[in-house]
Length: 375
Image (cartoon, rainbow, N blue to C red):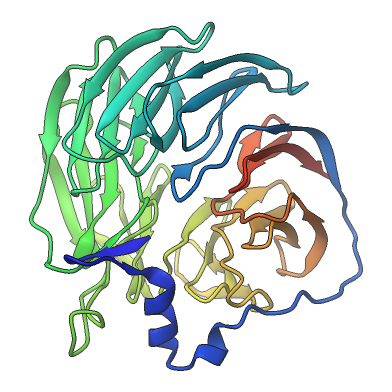
């Protein structure tokens, strides 16, 4: 994630500046613990480097789809890891992978959006949006929703790629360039924006349903006033929650947008919701468990500071995160204590693992695609 304002500034520089001391940005050393669980590697494949692109695998039915930054899109059998097809998209993939309704979707750094047949990899359609695609396209109810680097959100017809609607809003002069995409539920597209705004948009018409403020910019300089939502909102049947960088965590009524609660927290990684819990990773790498109805704390694990810890994945009795050094960490979801650790290929894990059957898959920056379980 970078800052857009003429000359881009890398986020780590901003984070160190906010900390006030470079020594505070030194990655924490890994702590020893008594393992009470174990990671099981079911299979591993190499899909090619992702570079600085936002590439996550996606699981659809019995298949796992993954892409690399240079344009290769691949399909693997979910249970065995066997490669079923590999195609060259002919453009640099900067956002992916999405899947649904028999299609696999990727976006490019020049605004290309392409849909391929899940079964054989044949191109169904190719379309253009206004600028680079920085997150995976999402598909629901016949609409492909694509978010672009200029802050716009487009709805495309899943049958032919034709644009159905375009949502755009004014943005501040200085914004965080992020890989935040959209979350879709019950015909509503939820998206976070610059200056801490959260919007609910109609899936079929692109009309704003409601908008709310997660956070208000604060500070004396433009840099201090950056308070953008740079990660995915999360939503269940009753509430939607989002967190802003240099801002707050807030939850709202999913249908009407009324405020339920707020809490002072900063995160550029993201959060997840499971049962009674709201789990998130804050800006410095602390992993927290909160009550999703009130925001009150259950526990926190502050032993991964400055390890560029990913957003968490809740899986059964565990909470999983990755880090900059290729480690996967498993915590007890009830108290946050470490229960297992596994190192992949040593390159960064930039995004949370993805559920796959009774296990999960994770992709590393150098292109390692791992299917694992934890017991």
